Amino acid sequence: MPTSNRSDRAQRDARLEAMLALARVLRGRSLDAALATARTHPQRALVFELVHGSLRHYLSLSEALKPRLRHAIKDVEVEAALLAGAYQLLHTRVKPYAAVSACVDGVRALGKSSAGGLVNAVLRSLVRLPPEPPTTRAGITEHPTWLAGRIEQDWGEKAEQVMEANIGRAPMALRVNERKVSTTEYAALLHAAKIDFRPGMFPATLVLCRAIPKSSLPGFADGLVSIQDESAQIAAHLVAPESGERVLDACAAPGGKAFHLVEQVPSCQLTAIDTDEKRLAFTRTEAVRLGHDIRLLQGDAMQENWWDGVPYDRILVDAPCSGTGTLRRRPDIKLHRTAADVRAHASQQGNMLDAVWPTLRPGGTLVYCTCSILVEENDDVVAAFLDRTANAAAPAISADWGLPTSYGRQTLPAPGQGDGFYFARLVKVDA
Image 1 (cartoon, rainbow, N blue to C red):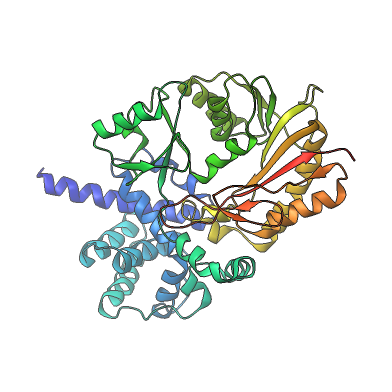
Image 2 (image 1 turned 90 degrees about the vertical axis):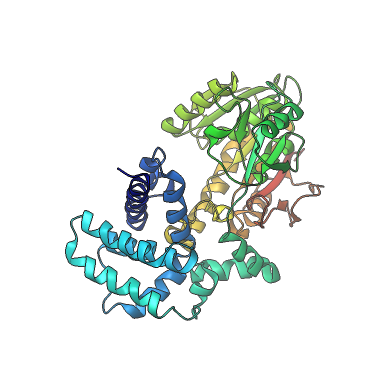
């Protein structure tokens, strides 16, 4: 078979895989789960680009498609084909005939031949008559109306920049495992591999100029480096354990922040717990790759049955949250999260602080962080905790990153920079 034919077939197969992944997301699956089968696909980069792009622009694409449909589409595979086709036609340089024919072939390959004509007609209409710019708030901002309103409420004049950043591509940041190799030595390995990068915000941080598969990173399999967002790396620097101190990571999986802590201070006594055994299994595998020996426990931070009764000097609570600071990486959040979810997370976050606080020694430090940009999950949670906890204080965090808030600091997504993370430092004082 000629090489060009094999390439065309591979790309058509990738577009079908992308349609299937999109359909899984439309049914309610997380993006990570929806893309599980695509991670080993020979055209993985194309699959990921089509899925992420279609979800980043889901709201404006839906607005562009709606007037070209007589009825709402009830078949999620057909909707996925239309979204993937519209994304390629409106946001990429893919030749129109290739985008249209691949989507038509895709629905037919799924046994939906009767929908092929609809997909063909709708996508060809986008070629003949490109849509006007979106007019709805959701379409203009690429955020659901409730979320756009919340971001505007919380961040005022910065809201437009935040939402614009949320539809961009997140940079690929690395954390060098300095227990195995110095950052200078690892930078030389990147140079030798002709991988362009720049220094990051911390000494062991390097940011790639272009995202690449982790398998292409020098020494990745040998544990020389990890992939971790720049803002996420702030957590370990705030916890700042000292040699011999007892440290708890209360929501540890998949382990990035826990491993960063022991890379900073190998002699700290770290306990890492999480409720999810599958995620803990991955964490154990990562520990082997990186060469770290840490105490990993399956346990619920909301309970005390995992605790040995000896207080901790430092605690990290990287609380489950809405993930609204990571929309560049997880655009499915815009489809799946609701305002009610945010309220539920805020309640859970407060309960988690209440549950973990007794395990901290007097004078000890607890770092509370989320990957949310919503005040309801951040300052509001800390304010309520301080109101009901007489022996807690939140000293100001002096730093050259992020923005100061009433009780902590917040990073916001921006082109070429880290995700949106919130941090507060709580100290146990005399009541």
